[in-house]
Image (tube, rainbow, N blue to C red; front, top):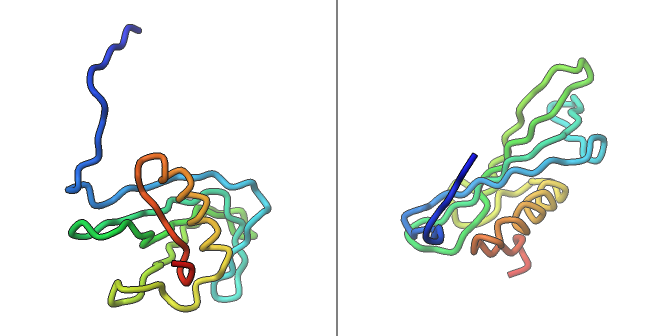
Length: 118
């Protein structure tokens, strides 16, 4: 296959969402929902910027398996209902996943500071 390209891709301010996908080592993160444990193996973190405001992580979708081996998706909203701060009760491990994704997002100009550390 022959491939060529010209120019450099640039994110426009109109681009208000960026998703960063990360694979997690199996067995390193377990989420418990309604008393049931799920082994997480993948996370998709969505970052957003509204009206040119700084980028924030607003949602994480985890791909996991329950004890029965069936796949399940678990979505965690990271911002409160007013979208002006972090949602209370989000486990620290979820914020660590966001920070891991933000490391990759930094490569495209997204800067992220975990809640309470700004």
